[in-house]
Image 1: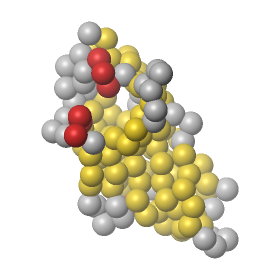
Image 2 (image 1 turned 180 degrees about the horizontal axis):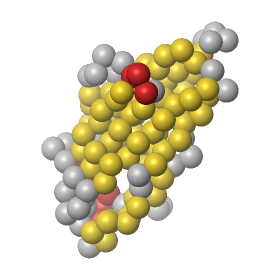
Image 3 (image 1 turned 120 degrees about the horizontal axis):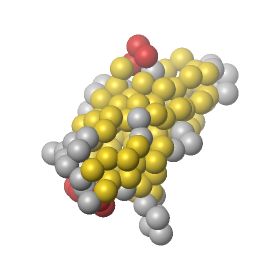
Length: 120
């Protein structure tokens, strides 16, 4: 089994910052692309940012210049630094990882989500 556990969410004022972390653990030997998604109330889940095993990144336009995704492969951890937060960033943030498993195969896994609330 593979587990993803997010942390770092919370309540912050507009203009503030938060840093999310997601640790991957369990029966796997490496991760490929990792990413962060979010889902606001009444809206569909959307991609926020992704990062490949080689460090290439991709962002949704609404967070470019404000959010930074990074990873520490030795710690099997992906981060999302969120600066200049806006009320519209309020959502549950989910971590996702494409994982190479010891028992064979490649599969996507998701975390349970962490709430980010930005007050205006």
